[in-house]
Length: 151
Image 1 (cartoon, rainbow, N blue to C red):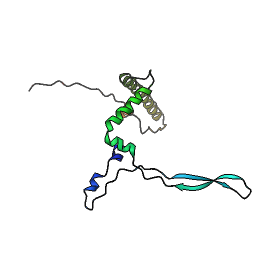
Image 2 (image 1 turned 45 degrees about the vertical axis):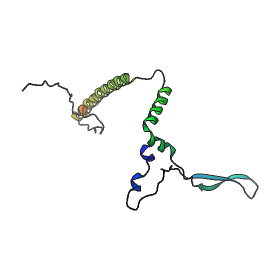
Image 3 (image 1 turned 180 degrees about the horizontal axis):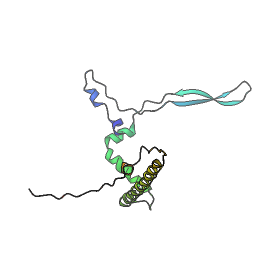
Image 4 (image 1 turned 90 degrees about the horizontal axis):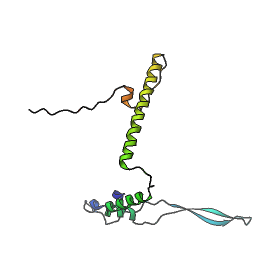
């Protein structure tokens, strides 16, 4: 949104130059209907085509360009105010996501074991393209801390 609100300053200084213009809102044409009466006297709503939107400044994008930090700060405050009191904090969310990731890896390892067992019995099962490579290769990644050796 910030980019959409940025005035075309570079165009002003290019050869041939551009004229000053605030960024315009990108509005779609609106459907128009009109009351009508058929030959039997029945009233109905007829299609009247479409109306072109007015040429107006994109105020939201311009506001974001002027002060994106204030806009985001207010937006985050509104989100926090609307969030339920029993929502997850950042640490608890990270902990739950980590536990779910571990559970998913364990299940994918079980899936891979079943695929390999089926292959041993002559049944070919394609592996999912989004399967965790650690499960498909049956490997465990171990992080090792290296000690610094004084030279």
